[in-house]
Image (cartoon, rainbow, N blue to C red; front, side):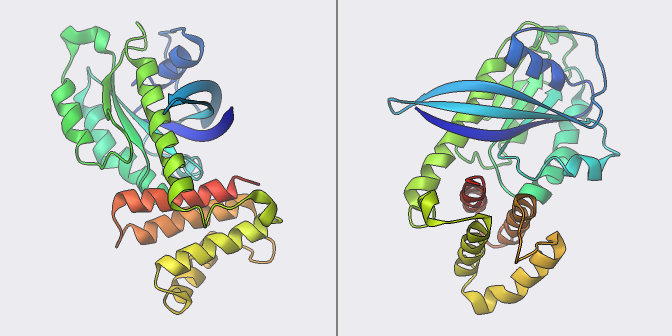
Amino acid sequence: MEIVKKNIILLGDGATGKSSLIRRFVTDQFNDKYMTTLGSRVTKKDVYLNHKGVQTHMVLLIWDILGQKNYPYTQALSFGGIEGALLVSDLTRKATLNSLKEYWIPSLISVTGSLPMVFIGNKSDLRNDAEFWDAELKKLASNYEPCEIRNQYFLTSAKEGNQVESAFKELAAGMLMINEKVRLTYSQFIIDKTEIDNIKGAADRVIADFSNQFGGAGNAGPVLERLILEVGLDIENPTKKELVELVNAMAGVEEKFKPQNTVGLNRAKRLYLINMF
């Protein structure tokens, strides 16, 4: 059985229930004691997906970060290798929905470029206290291309467990679809690991792919030089962290002239290659 490892993140204002959603999904437990998440916390969950009759074992590394808006640089450090996001709002506070649009999504995409996203309206068990419902959530989700996501929004209850597993698994399925596209569409790019000796070889392939899509080395050269300097990439001895930052910077450039889905797919295939090491 194939094993796929993916980094996902939950984003949204404080007290929207992000940590409770993770706890419900991972352990099927709920704790209504609220505690501000300091820094970031990573939880692992194994998910088994059946796609076209083939079962895939996906290991989700779930990032839960500080939900306060005045820590943008601390939060951005967690965005680098993220491949999918759950955008969490609190149905009893419409301001949390606006925050997704005005702060959390721009902050994430400015680092990662286009990627699969699922929108969550949490605390559906508090229907009588709701300030918005599915229509508003759907409207916000429709502003962003689905990027292989079939159902972009869910009304969840971390307390009762409603739709929590469905939301996580929908995101996982969307990332699996991108994985499949990466391998089918770019078979000449994603080659057997034995054909690349080290991370430096992966860096070479990533840079070459970007150059090819940018119109050749002549056109891409000045842009690449700037990006490499910005992320502090050591060409002679590149690290995985530096390469992830370079891939994200490439996505930021490409989103200015390529469709979102193409940008997301390019980012996914480059991360796929880097993650082989």
